[in-house]
Image 1 (cartoon, rainbow, N blue to C red):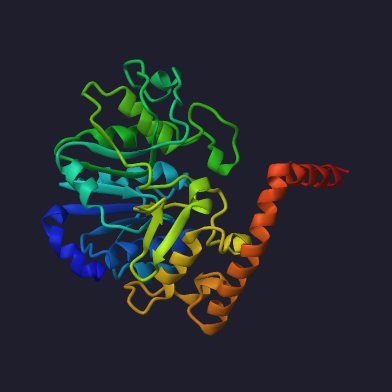
Image 2 (tube, rainbow, N blue to C red):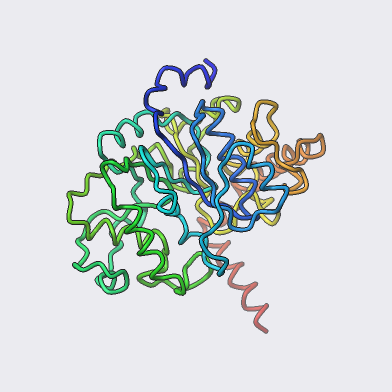
Amino acid sequence: MDAGREATKTDALSDNLTFYTVADRRFYPAATGLVNSLRLLGYEDPIALLDCGLSTDQREALASECQLVSPPSSEPINPQLLKPFAHLLRPTGIVVILDSDLIVARRLDQILREAGEGRLCVNPDPESTRWFAEWEGLFGLGTPPRRQPYVSSGFIAFSVDHWPDLLARWWEACQRIRSRPTTFYGAADSPTAQSDQDALNAVLMSSNRPTNLFFLPEEALPTMEQFRREVRIADDRRLACSIRGRPVTLLHPSVKVKPFETSRWIDQGRSPYPRLLRRLLVGSDVRVQAAPGDLPLWLRPDLRGALLARLLYLVNAVVDPIRLTLYRLGIGAALRGARAAVSRR
């Protein structure tokens, strides 16, 4: 069944729904893929994109499907801390906040239903017990944060009617740590090293209302290790993926250097993400046509790009098992240590 036709079954769930994401020039290929994945799945709802440094050509391409929003200040800031920018737009209805390098591979109907009934729909973070008493002072909470599961800020869905002050409190918490370094930019761990994610969890852990969370099923957003080893593509055209026979909803390369960056040719073929991203950038049925000059060679919509992508997939299909074996034997770590020692001389 066509993904767009499939959407007609649940159009009522999309009433007063808006998607929000943040992107800059570096994340442009991924943001284009995200937007195209939503449209291919039948979502014609508004997509608001905070422009943190897109080029003129990139803005023109994304403006065809997105409401582009300018940052509230020209002062440089970690774009992660602007994630709750929906607060500035006074949204109504259901809000879905996504990292720009997510691919939505499956309809979100169950998640939107849960959000409409008042639940905050989130994905548990692998560091599920993360907690700091210092959050009370750092974020001006007014009460000590309680211990509860630490969640990811990469995907959040909720109803503003049921959570009227969440965006404002999250936005304020992010603004309080504007000058603090984060792990994304190489800083050591600290109570604010996870930036917007620490801010979100501090707010949730200090809320005086019951924290009515709906956790996405484990298979909805696989971990990076599962992503590389267990997720299988069933149908490129429909973006259909599965893990252990269960459908995957969201694909996210949760690494610092992303598979769509030129230096990461080695990632091509190591997970489904690059393959589906290429489909979302060069497919004849996508809404946003990316400018080839803004894409790595293997993501470009020409014969050379297709051949290079295929070649990299085949090379990594051979190399990756060898790399994994060396890692398990400890040889890979030893070689890296030796190289580091030589480089320090």
